[in-house]
Every structure is written in structure tokens, then in C-alpha cells.
Amino acid sequence: MKAIKTLTGAAALFLASAIAASATVVAIFDGIAKGRNTFNQTVAAANGVVNVDTWANLTPGVSIDRGDYKITRNNGGSFSPELYGTMSGEVVNINPAGGGANPRTDPLDYFASGVTLTFANALNSIGFEVGDWATCCNAPTTDLFISFDNGTPINVASALNLTEGLFPSQASPFNIVNEIFVAAFDDSDSFKKVSFWGNGVGEFLVFGGEVRYALIEEGTLPPSEVPLPATAGLILAGLSALAATKRRKRT
Image (cartoon, rainbow, N blue to C red; front, side, top):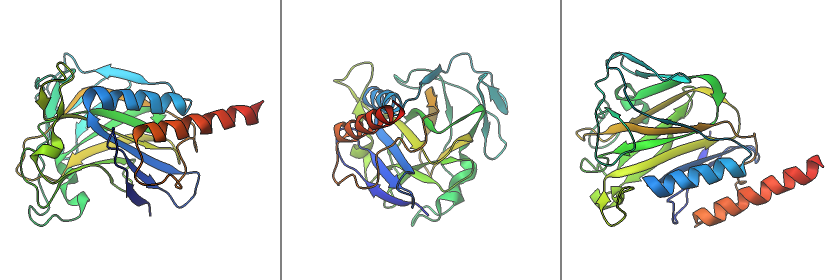
């Protein structure tokens, strides 16, 4: 069982530490531009390489093949790709359904309304864009979840009200929009399936835009002793120090 700790700071990071000190889950929840940068820096500091796929020319149907991975609905339904706001590419609609509206029930009760990305090669880090989230339906919160290989859901974002889902647009930082970047890292292992869904029954929700993914070295994320609260800078400083230590050990 992984205990979840909330980190506040510039990138609105969440940290969940596994029982083993060397296994850590980190999640990012921020505006698209800042979240994307934090993802890139985190992967680089953990000795990984970021792969980027901007969604364009998606074909409607029950499965979308992006080469490195395939996208399917968890309920077996079909996709009708569209554009949304200033998100980087095309998106698909994943309106939350199932479970209880108020109060919320188990996160997996809403799983069927989400999507799954099945990769050809293993990874343990993924990030992507989400639109129109937190515009309604807080009971008391509206939440977003990621799971690796059908494992325990990771709460990557949570909002009590509309304001908590608003961030600067990547196209114009002076415009505030309901467009975010969320990501999850799990350095305990590597995986081939990533699922994503929300529990805000009644809200409109889109997913996609641009997907970033990577395989980082196991045990390279910050240990569970990181104090609260912590900023994105502190997290990345910890990653850099850990990576430097590993390099010294190799030499």
C-alpha cells in the first residue's frame, strides 16, 4: 500500500512513497507549460530520455494507434477526436461516469469512463494534457487518477472549486484557462499500460494534446524523507543530488 503525501509549491506536486525507501511515486499537476518543463527536468535528473507525441490526424474508432502505443476506451467505446482551447494537439472526450456523484466512492468505480494507453516498450513516467477539468461537480472534490498496469490508482490532481483548476494558457500566460498538465512517475518498476480517468461525474473532460513518456532508472526519485511543504525546485534538487551520487558510485 502506498501512502500519499501532498506537496505544495510552484508545480503543485504530489508525492507518494512506497514501503521501500528506494521506491517512490511522484505526480505533477500544473499549467501546461510549467508542468511540461517540470516533467522534462524530472526525467533528465533521473537519467531518462523524454519521448514526445503531439496528437495530430487521429482517426476515429475504437482504437487509435500512435506507433509506440495504442489508445483505447476502458469501456470499449469509440473515439471522436477534436480540438480544445490552446492544448498542444487533438484530444478525446472522457466525461467521468459511474460511482457516486456525492459523496464520491472508490476511484475504480469511475475507471470505465477513462482511457488506457498500451505501450510496446516499458516505461514508468508519463505526462499529458487535460482540458475543461474542475469546471463543476466538486463533491467535495473532483479528482484525476493514473494507474500503471492496473495497479493502485494514483491521485494526480484534486480540486475543491473552479479556481483550483485554472492556470495560465501556454499560448498566452496572461489568459487563465482550464487546461492543465498532469504526470506520474513510479521508479519501483517498469510498466506497459497506463490508464487515466476522473471522478467528477457531470463534468466535461478532455484528454490528450501532447503525451510525454520515459523510462527512468529505478530508485532515482527523491526518498520519502522529503519534508512538507516542498517546492518543485526542492524536488528537482533532490533528484539532481541523487543522480550525482549514483554517477560517483559508478566511477
